[in-house]
Image 1 (tube, rainbow, N blue to C red):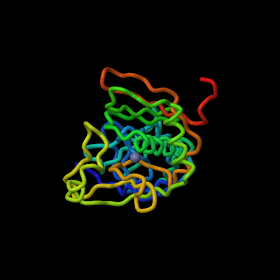
Image 2 (image 1 turned 120 degrees about the vertical axis):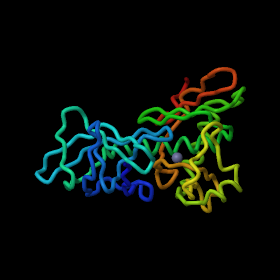
Image 3 (image 1 turned 90 degrees about the horizontal axis):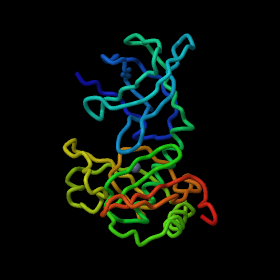
Length: 248
Ligand SMILES: [Zn+2]
């Protein structure tokens, strides 16, 4: 059976801690709760880590967060040899916020890259220190310096970032919203989450279920570390934190 968890990071990606009640422990020891702030691995963004604090102050370390049968089912995976909470037990769920915030900055940087390089996306992966976006792009025709400069213009403009929900029909009427070549956003649930950048989404909007920072300025200094050729049709762009190293 599937459990529905109230997924709080969708509406507020800045929630770091929440009290929750244990609904179930699955056959592999994963913990399901009535609500969570832990993002589950999806769309190239890794799931959250952190701790669950029990009423006696002891902790259960959470090593990963994944989705179950549906995207609505969020499973917190404990590290090895952690105590198992009881069904109905109340816990305080606490994110590893430093890690999550880096992932939010990096994930948002991937959106900025897709604005600067408006080509079909064939893959993407976010991590704490390095992210990559693959484009269907036979000839790069751009340099890491020029792309870095355009991304930093978006960062420095400090555009607002917000989400809004649209219907399947609205998405169908606006196919240009979809940037990925192979991955279609899930339709059929009736609504789709759009991540918008700029006043009235003037910079960009695209379907995404991940966590993002609230303004482009929060992304901070980033640069393109590398543009790699991946096969005949693909170029892989690597995003890193900090300014572009000089003389490289
Ligand atoms: Zn996103």
